[in-house]
Amino acid sequence: QVQLVESGGGLVQPGGSLRLSCAASGFTLDYWAIGWFRQAPGKEREGVSCISTSDGSTYYAHSVKGRFTISRDNAKNTVYLQMNSLKPEDTAVYYCAAAGLYSDYDQMTGDGMDYWGKGTLVTVSS
Image (cartoon, rainbow, N blue to C red):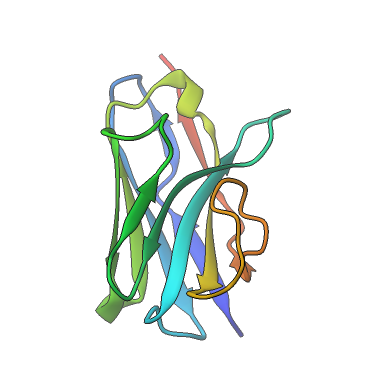
C-alpha cells in the first residue's frame, strides 16, 4: 500500500539541470524524513540529500552542496530534488526513500530507511 514513485530522470549534458520528483502514497509526508540516494554501477549507494517533512530541515552531501536543492510540498505529498550544474560523476540511479522521523537510519547510506522507490536513472554525458 505504501509506495514511493520517482520521476524526472533522463539524459542531460554536463552543466545542465534536472528536477526529480518523489510522489508518496499510502501515507502523508508529515513527520517523515525523505532522502535521495544514488548508486552508480559498481559503486556503493550514497546519500545525496534528506529533508524533514515536518520542519523542512535539510542535509546535503558535500559533493552536491551548492548545486542540488531538496524541497517538499506536503499538500501534494511530493518531495523534489532540483539538480543544477550536473557533472558526469552525478550519473547514477537515484532512489527516493522514507523513514519515520525518529527511525534509526543512516543518512550516508540509507540503511534503516523504511520505504524505497524503484529509482530513476540520471545520465550526465556530452
